[in-house]
Image 1: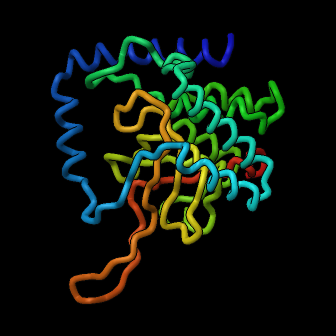
Image 2: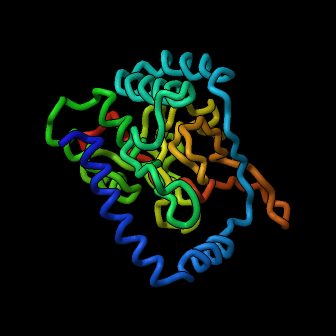
Length: 247
């Protein structure tokens, strides 16, 4: 069974179960929204969807200076997937997502399927090796985090600073402080690490592959006048793709 077929079959079984749970518990979606609103961080961090045409040159230039074959392989494959999606040659089903769950509370999120697809197919691991096979079976943010925790080096929250590089895996938490809810592939880090650019599948219900710019570090001042540095609380865990197999 191919990577796509196994991911699709697994998602179909999971969402059949999810549909039954949702019908039995119609208040779950509202409870999730209420919790998300109550956990909104007090400091707003900048986020923007970018056009690749305006930023590809700086991404490619930074890759050359990084001199990492792993980073180059991962980023180039992610960029190609973004271009293919924009050209209409890809859709959600290419990454194993179900074709009929696109709206509402049962939206079939495919961010981790996209990240797994990029890492699996970017030839950073020997073909059909145990690690590549394990990576190909991952379809949830929590599962990707566990994969990197077992097989690579990981950094959490503020320790992401000074360790993040293009080609890395990044798990985000949109609603819950320590619960992963989104998977991304890092493609560019600004010189002072204030901003991290990622390529994502279906962020915030956008049923697309998109290039994102997110603020990671923000300088501010407390009500008492003390200068402080804030770390974006959505940045949950970094997985080093260059260290897979060398935890």
